[in-house]
Image: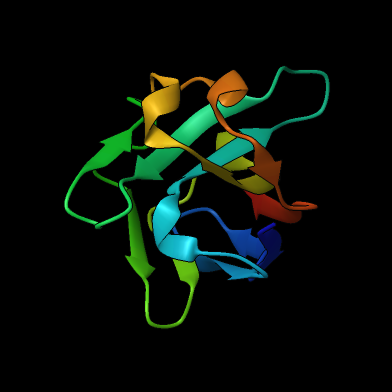
Length: 125
């Protein structure tokens, strides 16, 4: 079974950039659609971005479209989230997730079977 480990979180000023990484181990990475979700204090977990197993299809939440870019390197079993023009409202714990694309909508957290432990992103104003 695939295990997911996120890294790259931290503290950044508004307008800055961060790149999150999610390394997968223990399974067939290319079997999975990969997604990023986030959860801010007191709020529900929300969809950020997702990418198909091939990398050819990507999905974004409206709040991050044009600022965030999801990508994957199947040779390295890693998915990335490049976050630019960060806003204080992007502050959250960011989670990487893996799921079968046959499960349905990429934006639904219930359609992902495996989750990482999360990495904190804090954007100061």
